[in-house]
Image (spheres, rainbow, N blue to C red):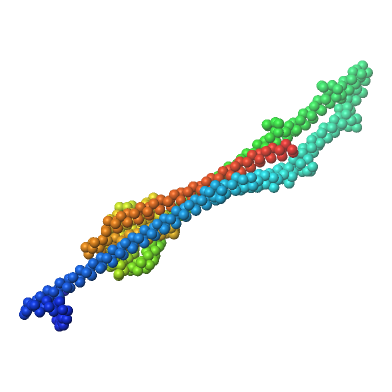
Length: 513
């Protein structure tokens, strides 16, 4: 800048003074004193006008500040009332003992004709239940086991045994008949006759005795006879066959079949439990992938874009100037910190002063790191107040609203419409801080303590509202957990009852067969 621009400025005026008091004052002066005193009077008047204009601006700023605080307080009170009513209605909807959704759900679950009874009935009740159909499929009249044990089946096990035993008895009978037939020269009777014929002498002497012994061997009245021993062997074989198909004997074939079927059913139940465990593990991995996706860099960019759009709407509604600056560098070389900048519009307290907004959906950001980030963003964007926005997804345990000096820390959930009041409160408090700074720079008489008190009250009310919302979410999660536990208990009861009834049905089917 050249020195010429600092030269004294001069303005030539030709005035016609007609005010009686001013004319009287100037007429009392003479010569050069009149001009000098006129200049002094003009300067005093100018300064008085400036002072008067400053007082008017102070009153306007005071009125605007009071109106702003009243509007913010009314908005928060109305919102708190709405939230309280919503919480009461939500709690009544879920927990009312007569009309609550939870009570109705429990009644529907455990009533005589409820969901639990329907599930048990469909799986274990009646002839058309799932377990009855499964047992009928494996042990019913059309099952391979039933056909195998059916005495009417030509290819069944009993028919096969009867055929084998009949053939064996027929062979033994034919063999006995052949041994006592005279038509067969090799039979025992033919050999006996020949021996008797050859030894007629001895035959005459012991014929009666031999005939008696022969009759004794062919009589069932003597336990030691050959025919009695043969019949005893046949009966013993028959008893062995019957024992193999009796459940009273642990080592019988039918008992072994029963044990094998019971073990198969138990293995099937174990496999179902393992499959259920695998499904639950798979769902848990899906949930973990969902959480990982929520913390991915691209998801963080989406969160920043959502915050920028919300702040843009607030700035346009308030008549302020908005600029999205996340992709451009600022005052610091090669630095792009500061996602959005809002400049207070003309005609408002703090006009021309700026607020910088920075958003992060990153669980690694602590309060210290956030303060360092927003401090650098204020320097980079030449802003006086900074607002750092955490994500409720990545920082669920942080307080919803805090003020640290000229910086505000806000936790926002872009998926929850009720969380929008946090950004609105942060925007209002930031503009109030700029108005306070403007008043201090102009040395205006503004009740800054009252503004600080209002800001602290806003912070307390916002955090109190967030606590109420967290409790509502806990109640909602508890209700869902109770419903899920009741469903699992019902499934387990149905499975155990079905297994017990299956065992009883199997035993009845085997005994009836």
